[in-house]
Image: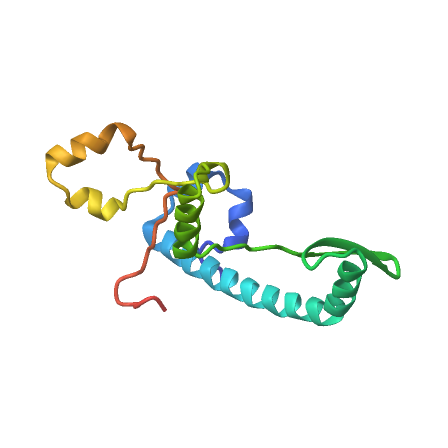
Length: 161
């Protein structure tokens, strides 16, 4: 029995205009199917990443140590395969501590801007709540960029199933 339902595997041979012209119910079903596949793929990737870490983690740590480093990219061979293991560095700074250090540097007569960068920002929610005169003052410094559009479709009565 042939069905008229389009599946995600059918999308490869279709133009974007053809996909956009599909009935909205088909688009909702495609989105549900794709979300399920993405969820499954993420879970499988997590499992494979965990297995790779179990298999190569100790060795990568040893290679890093032999190069005098705790993080970063290292390469080593395992049979016919070159393994590249990357342990990225994620640095965070305590903002209160940095502010105190900034004050100490300034109190000693040195320029803290030589050591510590300052990033000014305005909370968008606050900006939108300000009175017009204050928003107008800040408006020349504000640029709005858009991200990629996201659409969520759900068929009535299906409750996301």
